[in-house]
Image 1 (cartoon, helix red, strand yellow):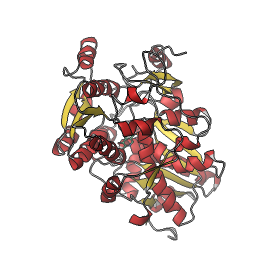
Image 2: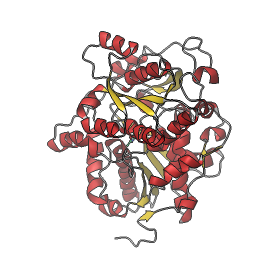
Image 3: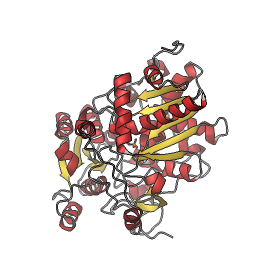
Image 4: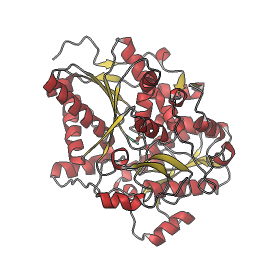
Length: 457
Ligand SMILES: *Cc1c(COP(=O)(O)O)cnc(C)c1O
């Protein structure tokens, strides 16, 4: 075992926790492209957005200039129930890999939702409550976001209506019951409850659903129900803003020991954990103060950054949401059913998309059997059973550490361990039984959904 000059876990004191979220957009020279009204193709106004989102969240969504937003006291005290989250030095993983690299991970799985999503769920629920709303609607795929939102709504006494992608609803009954424990109502999507759900079912009978479909249903429900707004757990600028708490804590913990990372790695679904983790580091990079290598890791079966197109697209399948400019596979893209690792969204945060287009970060895709091999190795040496999503980042961190072993470089690698995988044991089972397959979409398949991109300009 290496000499432990740095503690195994670096915790911050309560007093050292961030008091404001950091808005990375304020330091971006090329701002992320605005959301467009799908009818007029003009930027969405605050008034248009306020039919869907709470007022204060609309302000956060549209604000490209204010660098810091104070975290309201109520949210900070909720954060104290499960934050600060530990920054762990992965001594055991380093030893296992026999690498000179120094590996750290920021662990966000220490709450009942089992992921980082609670950081934004409590913020979004808080502003809904403050506005005097009755409740919120949302979609959930694997279930972490729905669970996080249910927890936040239960805490604040808000009604919570969740459309859960049908295949997850059936495969993950325990997640569903956790949400119901926190008082949410959970409907498998597509459903007969909404017009868009009925339309999708008529066109694709027997579909197992997708995040894009569930978003359409949740938005329709919100805009047609008095006193309700829609909330989204990733992709949006406001979500990345809230998730900056991850990066701010990480940076504070590293600064405490004078550690400067060389490489920062995160898995990327819609981009919220990665956007949050890298925020203060990318800020330094944008201001020319320091340089870091930043790597987004996505599944080979849903490769938005690495094989998608940077274009305006719908955020949902039903095409009811505004258009966002992002790396996208097309809103009709649905990853193969055997894809078990989450990160299934067809698009990517507009902020990260712009940073990637500007060459400020890298992206790579990994196959799911390689992801689960990394997950298993990590579980055995570090003790934590990682979420499949998080394991994409573990894979890339291990690969980078192995490169250091070849070159002898003592790089410092930080990655985001976004959550735990206790509800993903069917996927682990398939991996252990050797039945897990890697499905990589063909160029033709991706082109077919890209051909349906809306015509903008
Ligand atoms: C939702 C989720 C992700 C992916 O979402 P991002 O918005 O890309 O961060 C990653 N890990 C876990 C555990 C999640 O629940």
